[in-house]
Length: 506
Image (cartoon, rainbow, N blue to C red):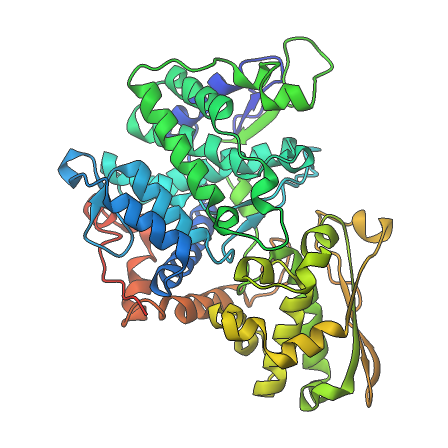
């Protein structure tokens, strides 16, 4: 323990047990309380995830609907500990609700993101992660009959654990998928809410890390599959199952962070014996929570492309004549950092044939945004916001998009750019225009939606995004907006019924 606001788990102690104690104490209110702005931020991220989930289910995306059908095969009444699937009156086993609901939240790859960057602590490993795991907190809260403030606290806890792990250990460096951090956080949060002991949480984390490690093979290949989008959901399900098993008495590997055969010490052997490769520092109260450094996506796109999107929007707003003639755009040059260049500049991504590949293709994302600008004669991010229709079968092969893709030169900017990540998303976008000459965005570091962007537009943009996406799945989008805002004041009965609304399939 250091400052009373923080809980420090040193590398030479049992951090799995420490996470269990932290989670239990946090949910019991023994560490104080997060500040109001933390509750507000996590509610924004949760609201954003709901819009993503509702639209993904309504439009019949494959993985969420396959997993919803699977969940329906595991009915369990609410009185017997069952919880609802989002937008239905169907109650199922909690791990299956978590699987289906998390898959829906993640399907568009349009919800929140973290980059594992905390320079004040020197914790800058830069692991990715996403706000995919809130259904774990909601399911646990519904089982335990928590009120809205307690439910949001569980979400804060979950983001705190996975966010701090992302700061100190980069799973991607070892080709392990980033969702493992979320799975660990899911097990700990679910257990802390359901009344598990710290020792049971330690056991569940050990079970998860020993038995359920996904590698980044799920994100490799010329065209990506359902496995990419559903990875977080599957690991969240595993975290819940591991916790349920531990609470029934199953004893998993202890002290897993210092286990020399587990992924942490195996991949990064610590300098000192009987240590893990890192210290962990968690916040117990105040404003310094991991969720405050996470980022929003304002549309459907891989977050690494946000700097290029902002650069393009900036150029369009300054030079609205660009949208008058697509043929006048002779060349677009985008310069960016690693790992973004490898992730969304993979040569296979120059010809995406699935949505999962297209939303990870820089050339497709920027070409589609420009195509919409030409069609709508608009320069506004709100009006050009990338939506599910921009990745459907027709959009993937739209002739204007494909022509523009051929004019995009995507390059790695070297150390000048690499050194500025993950503090920001360093990107420049240049256009060679037949009439306007050479145009440049200059260096973009903190695009709209980034945690360090100081624009006042974010709340308005998020509300706009919610209405665009959620209206695809409900007739009364304003009623849905009210249902999922003001969560902190909602009663246990309202949290129990939170997902009980009619979701339409288009």
